[in-house]
Length: 80
Image (tube, rainbow, N blue to C red):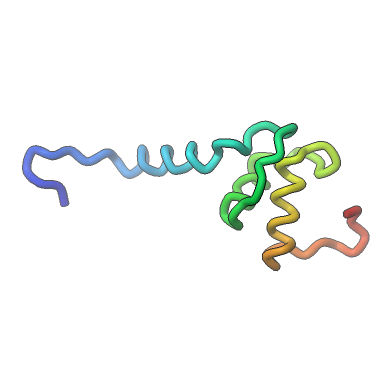
């Protein structure tokens, strides 16, 4: 609870700020974002849903992270 006279930002604004911060560095397909947390990899997969891992470096890194963390299992027929 805020002190009298103090204003608190709406929760929606906080969530938007968190989302923008998490999306920083994973918006462009051609730039490798480097190591990712599982949460960031999941967000990258959502952002780059229509991308191919053959072309999109962000999706490729995100998929690799999720597979290494045991959060995604590739079909044995999938190209690695």
